[in-house]
Amino acid sequence: MKEVYLKKGAGRSLKAGGLWVYDNEIDEARSSVSGEANGGIVTLRDFDGFFLGYGFCNENSKIRVRLLSRKEGEPVDDTLLKRRAEAAWNYRKRVMASTEDLSACRIIFGEADFLPGLTVDRFGDVLVVESLALGIDLLKERILGALIDVLSLDGVTIREVYERSDSKERDLEGMPRVKRWLDLPGRAKSGGETLIPITENGIRYLVDIAEGQKTGFFLDQKYNRLAVQRLCRGARVLDCFTHTGAFALNAAKGGAASVLAVDASETALSQARENVRLNGLDEIVSLKRADVFELLPALQEQGEQYDVVILDPPAFTKARSSVKKAASGYREINTRGMQLVKNGGFLATCTCSHFMEEGLFAATVHEAAKRAHVRLRQVEFRQQAPDHPILWTGEDNSYYLKFYIFQVLRER
Image 1 (cartoon, rainbow, N blue to C red):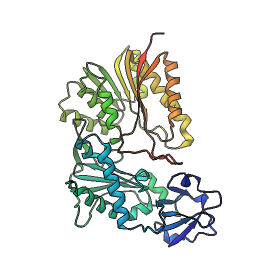
Image 2 (cartoon, one colour):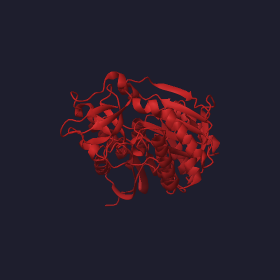
Image 3 (cartoon, rainbow, N blue to C red):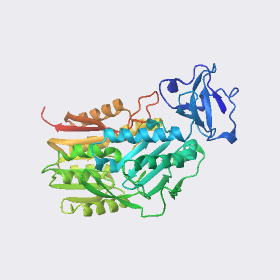
Image 4 (cartoon, rainbow, N blue to C red):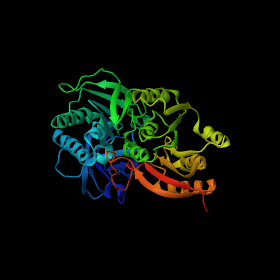
């Protein structure tokens, strides 16, 4: 097996529980990997030869090695991959609230399930997979086969597997972007309908696994949507960045008197309309195509006020270098959102950017409250649903969603 050695003093994140080794941590003179071994399994050693683990290597990536096992003598074989798949499924069975929640959930979440670079979401009898690293790409069909076998032991039949590996992150690994059905011999056949029906929190959706964002549906907000649902009885609700309407539909199901759902994408709104129709909520939920940054001040000028305002924007930053600009955007929409909330009403606000750290986001919202001349009473602080577990490591790359619910108060 090829060997990779760290420089003296390198690998601090790895030794703190992380799974990544960067190219600038490698002692190139002592490492025996060459380009033809890209994607293959290597033995990782410290500068003094001490065994650190087995992982896959890619010389085309700044993340040179991603660890799969820390146990010396444990081969990276089908037994290990099945054990990882089994552990991932058993974890979800323990932490998700119901069988319905398991029918639409994330089963594998990359590094947090010790399968770096791999995401697998379940939508009924269809799996959607995203592969973002060369080594895991070479292993993905074996992992999927093992996962399907594990699911079958609980009576779960997987009919088809669709690959949504079309993220630009694959460019960094020297891999082409792909969207396709996968054939897994003897397990799942390909080529079916790409609009998949699911039910979440008692609400029906059609998930577009081929053209929707990411793998087709934002499963990470499942229980946050449920938390908002409880606040909306009899309320007038504004849902910003509604995408395919999930928060709006949860507000309506919670008994909202009216919901205005806004998004700039006509494609997303088209799917939202279908989801509204599926649930018979046309008289409660209205949809509007608009730029939220332009709409919020316009609504304020019109004197509009809402009992509940929901802000679920896309990530304003995907790099540390643009965090300052992103904070300005979050401050702007939160200031405007708070000004539109009636005294005693509620604001639900979040960031899904890994780089917008918890403390910075809290400070940004606090600054927005000062600009809006309101006080905030925190109801809840929430994170991503537990099927997107947060692995505490030196990298902390699995923690990204920060979600607040506040009561907005204007009395001094």
